[in-house]
Amino acid sequence: MKSISRRKLITAGIAAAAGASGLAVADRLARRYGLIPPDCGGIYGPGETLTYAAQRLITTRSLAREFPRSMISKVPFANATPPPTDAFKRFQAGGFSDWRLAIDGMVARPLSLSLADLRNLPVRNQITEVACEEGWSYVAEWIGTPLVEVLNAVGLLPQVRYIAYFSTDPDWWESIDMADALHPQTLLTWGMNDGDLPVSFGGPLRMRVPRQLGYKSLKYVVRLTATDSMKGFGKGLGSAEPESGYAWYAGI
Amino acid sequence: MSAAVPHDKTEIYRHAALVRVTHWITVFCFFALLISGAEIVISHPRFYWGEIGNVNTRPLFTIPIPASRGTVPTGYGFVMPDQNGWSRYLHFQTAWALVLTGLIYLVAGMWTGHIRKNLVPEPGDRMWRVYWGRIAQYLRRAPPDAAEAHSYNVLQRTAYLMVIFVLFPLVIWTGLALSPAFDSAVPAAVNLLGGRQSARTLHFFVSGVLLLFLLVHITMVALSGFRSRMRAMISGRVPAPEEHP
Image (tube, rainbow over all chains, first blue to last red):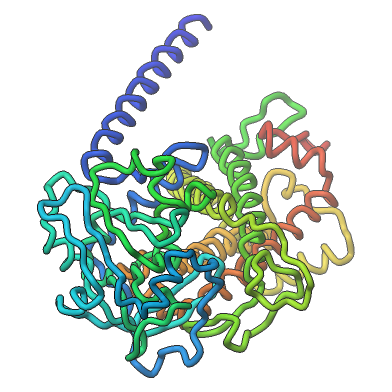
């Protein structure tokens, strides 16, 4: 009886040590290959990390579905928009001619671009679906400047891992990893369905990230920051969403 | 692991440890998925068919409950508290736990022969006559055959096989189809279902069928002796039927 329990103890000890070192190796590998999301802590951290790591292993370069023109929603749904800030109202009064997009952080040449500057960069238009975490969705044509064009113009430093982006509302900001930031379908969007992007849909400038849920497609973007860590931003969870209980990675 | 090894003369071994552990993990995960799924539905209790759907399009059907978002017209004068944040985190975390538990169950269940021996209907039972016979036995509320003390009958086997090999794969597929990132890698996952909103509606219906199974399952457990069935699924043992040697 005694020898059996001792053998069991040793076996269990070896198994636990192997499991712990296996987890440690997995953790190091996951960190090196960028498979750990900023909101990896807390009781939901394991599930969130599994989701993000699994998606990053299968979806780095895959393209979001694009649709034929006939599938564009006749009456898209603008969703509730927060009351515009005073800063936004001033831009709106001036017809957005003073709107600037600042790009700073770990870049070689910080820039401040007007909407006209953005339109002079290469343009991409795509017909993709906006899917809200609530469950509803619509399809629209989005016209804009691929984020990667702007990032190439400022020259990212090699250690950059995230692009944080901010709206006119200081409480409303987001970030994405480089797989989505350098993705050809991630657009700094200024046009919708052959016209200017309406204010209710995020005009004059909205980040569209079609491989993630709608809340990553931040409206009223005025600033981009390149960074190697999200620790210094807000509570360090990656964006404003995890601070109110929502996952940072919204590719599901 | 699978044979009916008697503990003592008055008990028989009913459920292997693998079956018991995976069963209770599944119970926990399923309840978490059910509650969090219901919370997510409350934020938009309208269902659509096809690719798109929102408050500006005609729904396939609407659940007549208040919503947790003010943008949804429900006819109620108030908005429920928004619980989507933790609901979504919990939904995906328990989905992972359930999928990994299911994989362990499947691999071990095939390895030990549990699925073949305990779940696939026995050759002599694969006839409509046997199915109708057992249904009639249930309807008459007749006591089960002695063999059912240590083995599932043909209706139980078929129901469990359907849950494991049809309903769970379907609910996983329709759920995955709601992931915009997964759909970018495997567009067929959502396109074959008829679009994003069809996938969402099917996910809801398949969850409903799973809930129906759960209700029938609990009812049958209660009717056949709640305490002894719970004991069997916890300790693995049931009292041996008083019978011939």
